[in-house]
Each structure stands twice: as C-alpha cells, then as structure tokens.
Image (cartoon, rainbow, N blue to C red; front, side):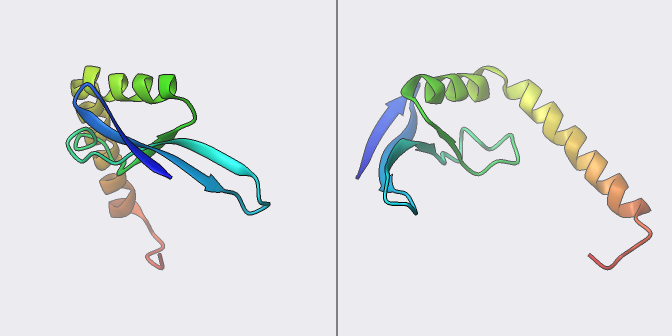
Length: 89
C-alpha cells in the first residue's frame, strides 16, 4: 500500500511491503525533484515520519550548503578522472 503525504510542500509516500523472508515492512520514500535538485541524490527513504521530516528539513534548510558540497564533489570527481592512469573503467 502506498499513501501520499506532504510536509513543507514536499510530497512523499508511505509504503508497505513484504520482505524476502515474508516479513511485513514499511517506511517513507521521497523522490521530489525540486527538493533534491541541489544534491546528487534522486530519492531517499526514512523508517519513521519524524525521520522523513528531519530529512526534508535538512534539504530545505541547507540548500546553499548542499550546492557547495555538490560543487566540491563534482570538482573532486573531475580531478580524479583527469589524473586517472588506468582508463579501463
């Protein structure tokens, strides 16, 4: 079962499923593109509603920090690939 929710105008879903060993599980899932546009993450999950709210708060309240970290990560990746001796990957 999937149930739509919304927190600070960010949509997310509550999901229930059965695990590989036939146990019931549940959690929250968010893949809102506007929320995650400043990071290299396309979706994230949370076990509790409180944890989902904390994650949404982090992404909304730290946009500039997320942009800076993404920029630094992109620079580091570029340097890594420019200086990589082995090109087999």
